[in-house]
Image 1 (cartoon, rainbow, N blue to C red):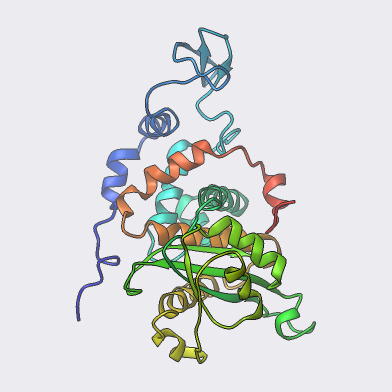
Image 2 (cartoon, rainbow, N blue to C red):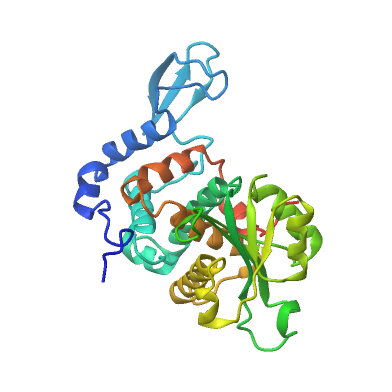
Length: 320
C-alpha cells in the first residue's frame, strides 16, 4: 500500500511549537508579525511611524501622524481577551494539527481553562476560518452534491423538509483528470430551491467552472447560469464513490459527516452549521501545508473583526 502524502507529511511538532511560541514574549512577537508583517501600520491612517508606551500591563502604539492609539489586539478577534497569548496559539495549534476535529470539551482539558473559555476560543477560531472561506470560488471541473446535517431528534417532520436538519451544498474542485481533489466549498443553504442554488452559484462558481452533479431539480440552475453541466446517474452508498465525476465529493462528504458526528456528537446545526462546515473546508483546503497552518490562521484571526461572546451566541447560518 502506498503512503498517503497528506497523512504522513511533516507537521509542526509540539516540541517545535514550544520552541517557537512557548513563552508569552514569543507569542506576542508571533502575533505582531501576523498583524503587521511589514512593520506597524496605523489602523486609522495607515502611517508607519509610531511610538510605544505602557499603561499598566498593556503596551500601546501611538501613531505619530494622527496620534491614534491602538494595541496589538484591538480591532481583532482577540480583542479584550484575558487569556495569555500563548494559550491562544496553543489552541490554534491543537485545532489545526490534529488529524480529527477537536471539540471544546477536549480543548478545555488540554488548555486548562473552563468550558466557557474553551467554547469561546473554538468559536472564534471557526469564525476566522469561515471569514477566510466565504469568498472562495471554484473553477475548472467541480463536483457538487446536496446533503443534510442533523435529523437525530425524535419527532417532527421526516425527510427533506425536517426542521431538525440543515441543508448544505458541498463542492469539490478537481484537476482535469477528475482524479485529484484541489479545493472545496462546504456551506449551508436555506433550501434546495432555485433561489438558494442561484445565490450559491453566483458566489462560489467561477465563470469557467464545469459542473458534475446528480439530477436534483434545482441543479439545472447551473446550466442556466452558463456553466457546462453533466448530470450523473449514481446509486446511493458506496457505489456513488466509484462514479468518476462524483467520487471526490462523496468521499469528502462522508469524511465531513463522520468527523462532525464522531468529534462533536451533536451540534446546533440551525445556528452553527456554517462554522463547523467552514472548519472542515478550511482544513481540507490547506491539508498539504500543515506546518503553515498556525501562522496562517493566526494571521486570519488578526484580520478578523471582534466577536464578543454575545455575538458568537447570536450566530446564524445565513446573513441578512
